[in-house]
Image 1 (cartoon, rainbow, N blue to C red):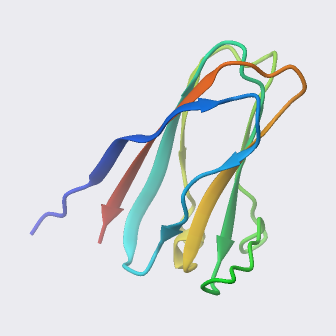
Image 2 (image 1 turned 120 degrees about the vertical axis):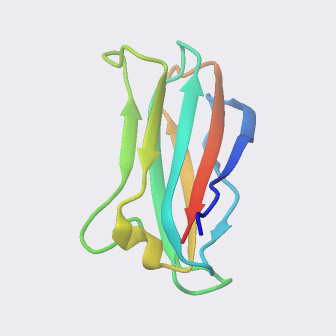
Amino acid sequence: MSTKAITMTEYIVDQDGSVSFYSPIYNLTLPLKSMGWQFKWESGVLGTFLWEASIYPGPYSWESLVVCETVTFTIDSSTTNESCIVVLPDQWQNVGYIRFGFVPATGSTGLIQTALRVVPT
């Protein structure tokens, strides 16, 4: 039996790229084959996306390092495209909860759009 992917093309819509923000917390209670996000941003957006995980349910104990591996993506003046896809490494899928954040660089302006795609096992 095949498994259908769950895609939310409007996971985060028109997020201000000049301020720090966190995504909604995703509960990884059910096992996944893969999990990824696609980001689209306007040309003035500069900053870093970072992922955090917690095994503890609230109060969460957020960690950016899972099995000695961080997941980040930085948009700077040398970034030529205005979109990217980030798929989490397998070991990150063994935690209980996950979220990503965005930290803008000085002078960042514009909007960020985010889609989420999850493939259950």
